[in-house]
Length: 105
Image (cartoon, rainbow, N blue to C red; front, side):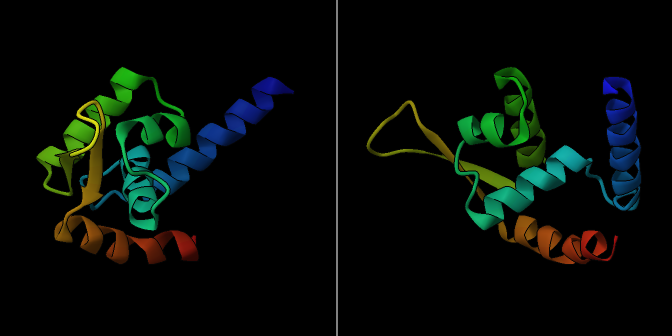
């Protein structure tokens, strides 16, 4: 049964990622942007919890999105260990323009 679930999940991810072929994003990047925009992700620790990535992978994902100018980091003024992340205007535009693709999917 577990093999069937994994196979089904992979097929679903492949079909969803197909919706982003004309963008420079993969599903985990888009989902991260979407969750930042909705307020569910505010720091890299949230990426780890919400997306289910290891800490190093979450940092690389945020690095990639920052390099694409889709998000920015901002260190907390009250706790220097905390680095917040938020969408740029370009990041907001990407989420807004790609959201209908998954709604219609």
